[in-house]
Amino acid sequence: MGYRTAIEGPEPGVIWGMIVLFPLVGFWFWVAWVVFACWLFTAIYQDRYFQATLDVMLLAVLLSVTGNIHLANVWHFILHNPLLILEGVVGYLVIGVLWSLAKWRLVLRRFKNRLATHWKGGLGIDLPHDLQREGLRLLAPGKVTLDVDCFKTRIIGWMAYWWVSIPLWLVGDALHDLFEALYLGVRRIYQEMADSALND
Image 1 (tube, helix red, strand yellow):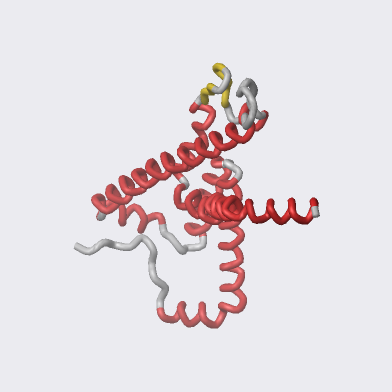
Image 2 (image 1 turned 90 degrees about the horizontal axis):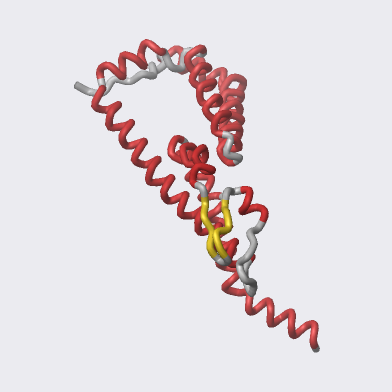
C-alpha cells in the first residue's frame, strides 16, 4: 500500500483560479511565509524557543483554518502509515541529538578560545563577565567548570529545531569562523604594512 498524503491537492478549476489570482493572493501568501520564516529564525537565533513553538503552532492552526491541511486527513495519514511516522520521528530525534552534540562542541570551543584570549599573558585568576553569565565558574587558576543545566533550554532547542539551527549556524557562525581564519592567515601581512607605514 502506498503512503497516503495528509495534504489534499487542489482541483483543476482551483488551480486555474490560483493562477489568475496569484498577482494578488499568491503574492501576499509568499510574503506571509517570508514573515513567518524571519519571525521563527529570529526566535531561534535569540534562543526564544517558547516563542518559536508558539509560532509553529500558530502556523499549523492557520493552515488548518485556511483548508491547506485537514486534521481528519492528518489523523488518517498517521493511522495508515504508522511505520513511516515512526521512522520519521526516530530520524528527527537522531538528527536533533547529533546536531545538539555538534553544536555543544562548537560552543565549548568558542568558550575555550575566549578564555585563551582573556588569559593571554595572565595567571587565569578571573573570568570574563560574559562567560560568567553563561554559567562558567573558576575552580582554580586556569581551571574552570560549567554547569550544563544552564544550557538545558538551548540544548533542547537545538534538538527540536535543528532544521532552523543548522542553517543559522551555516550563515552565521560558519561564515564568521571562515573570515576569522582568513584574517589570521593574512594578519602578519597587515601587521608588517602597519609597522612599515608608521615607522618609516
